[in-house]
Length: 78
Image 1 (cartoon, rainbow, N blue to C red):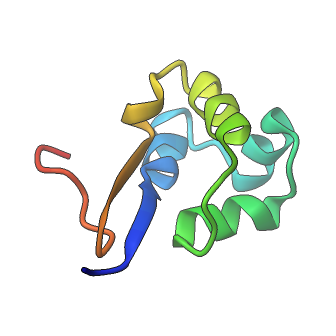
Image 2: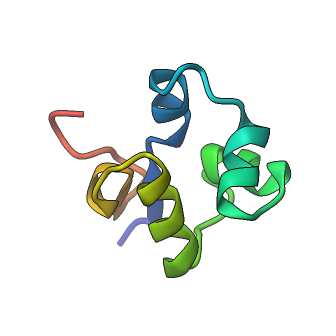
Image 3: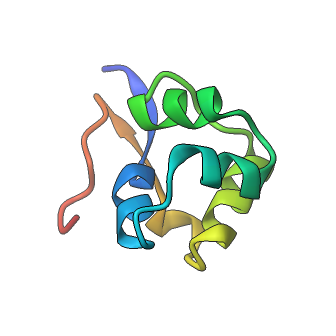
């Protein structure tokens, strides 16, 4: 069994939302910019609460911001 990872589309979503900076997103969800950097790099899996706050910031369901899979493979169609 490979490494299981919670991945995300945060970087793409930030740019789709008027090129929101990492700092702007961090301020909106109440974390540091370094936390957003770690999330985007896949070095950190967010708490469920943080994941919901991020998804809500983008006005998207959780599963359109985050994905769960082995070897950090993104689901087909994205």
